[in-house]
Amino acid sequence: MSDSTIEVLVFGSAIIDFICYTPRLPRPGETLHGHKFQKGYGGKGANQCVAAARQGSRTALIAKLGDDTFGADYLQQLRKEGVNVDHVNLLENHTTGIAQIAVSDGGENNIIIVVGANNQLGSDDVSLAMNVFKEAKVLVCQLETPLAATVTALKAFRHGVSIVNAAPAMEQTPKELLELASIFCVNESEAALMTHVDRIIDIRQAEAAIARLFEMGANTVIITLGKLGAVFGHKKTPTKFEHVPAPNVPADKVVDTTGAGDAFIGALAHNLARYSKRSLGEHIAAACAVASQSVQLPGTQASFPHATTS
Image (cartoon, rainbow, N blue to C red; front, top):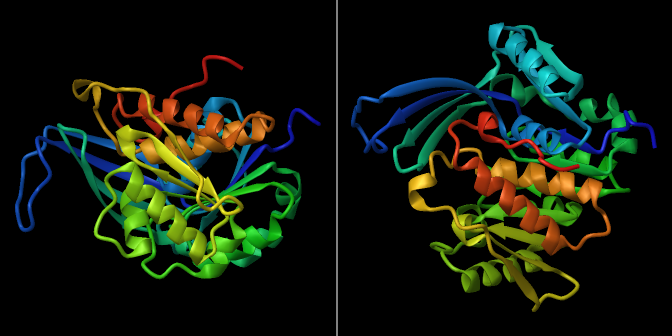
């Protein structure tokens, strides 16, 4: 295999983050004074791609940016991270996607997204990038870009492992999306919305949600549970689940949880591509470790750790 062969291919979003740090999150209609502002590079697709790149994978991103200052800056940033951007396009008459993020001193966040150029990611972009679809070992998709294009991407990638991070979650998730993904990964709130339960706060509830997602068409399901780690299962053994604990991070060390889920997905993709003989549980444990490191630093991509070993 050539040293330039793509290992992790990400089909998805690229968004500029505008982050306000504040003592607590505002209530509806309330104005708060924040104490810090930061511009960052985000979007779940680009985040996950950069997270995998920082772990050591050779990565490529298929995405759309606006032909504006933000888009040009982002393209340069992706190149600095070592991401292949041959299929990241700057679109005239479209704005780069943005996210307005509030982060409390306790590390909680809320986010408003205006996707802009990301809405132009289409099925034609799959055809134009078939060379990387054929060589990549892992494909990662999310739901911040048009669903039809994501389904096309999954259909085009049948030789490796595909991960669908169903975020933001859909209350009525198309069965085709669940069936096409090798691995379907959501957090506890996304899983609750998809399976129509009030909330998921423990391992037993996560296992019940995984069983329901099997019924809906999913093959392998991972539900991340924050500080509790993750629970996963396979459709072939629908009553067998495994809990993978996360490393303990003291509450006073948690700075910003914004990018933790994307750090997890990127690290999971890297481990699946690079260490194919290891078990899924081992891959998830490694991804939990990376996510646990990310919550101890501010920002999204800025918080993603670099691999310390090969």
